Image (cartoon, rainbow, N blue to C red; front, top):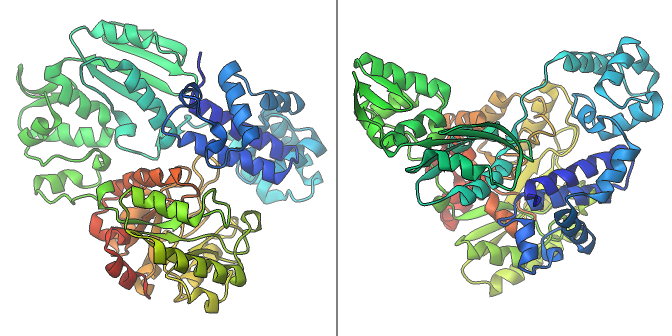
Length: 568
């Protein structure tokens, strides 16, 4: 069975994890992780690219060696390096590395010193009190690990970008003339997705399930009936496909999109009128009075149409009744990207190539914000190199037409809240993004003070990826976002919604809080390649879930207006 992009990315991620546990070369580890992100974001399957004769080494961050490995995986279904690493490091080390307080380096210590290979091994070591035998493991970490091991494992959830790739491939396979849509948390654009609810219309409902069983990416069939078929994909993602009649399509879409709390609120409105609302329609007695479209169900209930991203029962029903829902920001509102990297520091393309890629999307500007010197692995900029880059951008802007490259930096916030570059260097720039890339384990109070001190520097325009989370890999660091948002309002500092699919940071709750406080947001991609500009759609999803409108976002503005907003 052909291998999907999500599977190749997962193999590269797992190889990186095991290499790091084994003490492998950090540049090699990082190369596999970056390649995994590139593969997840590809608009086509690796299999299709190979079939079309594309040279995979031309993809950003993919050299000849990784391209060859990708081709081998597509051909054989196996990743030889990963198979070798698994034999050397047997057990659930990757699983253990995800526990709080651990990570690849500490897992390697546990493996080398105490022969810990599985969660059960770790449980025995903790019970025997042997963790204190390993330097760097104190009672606090031991307590956190013991508590984590006793918690039931959470339902596996998939990043939205991974679910999207699976959903689009599935829809392409199933589409056969009728209407087809993926509902559930996927349609509400949550940052992670537990399963896919696929609704299909057609005269022959049983044929939908029959066709699904021929899908090449199935790992297991859980159920198959005349109107519903449930499968597990090889990635582990569950799919429930349902055939629904045209007259019930809208009601079914509403019901299976959710959320559960939103549906309960709608059913309460129906009950107040003596009606019944379910997945088959809106009924007055036995007579269906609405259900063919979502719009007619909402209208019959006296509501304006509520976009799927808002359906979480956070006040959207009352505003829909008063016809006061916000006009949510959309991709077409965006005029530029304010967080972009080049091959000067960890990116894969030249500044000019990034500018040309953005211009092709219709953008009027981008901000070139390479890393500052503390990010040594990315060869971050010191004041001298930053000065040379500024001159290059000036020369480039003289010959570019239709787009402006703003001079910027992503400057590291140091442990004490000071910045990685002096004000004399930062003052020459149009955009300064301040971000935390280290010391994630500080206390809530210390971390918050650190970030606010950085924001107090008048050179800082935007706080980048404010909570530092990596979805499914690293939890947000301890930080009081209420204080940060309040400080941003007072100081005139903007907050970023980082659209990189691994981050989506701010989350929807914090984006809503920022909007409510009157703090302006920047939705940016953190693009390290031209292809990564496409991540903007995920940032838009996050913003819409936070009720954000176009006027709440600084990079929906014309360049002149943007420059005024960037000045403190």
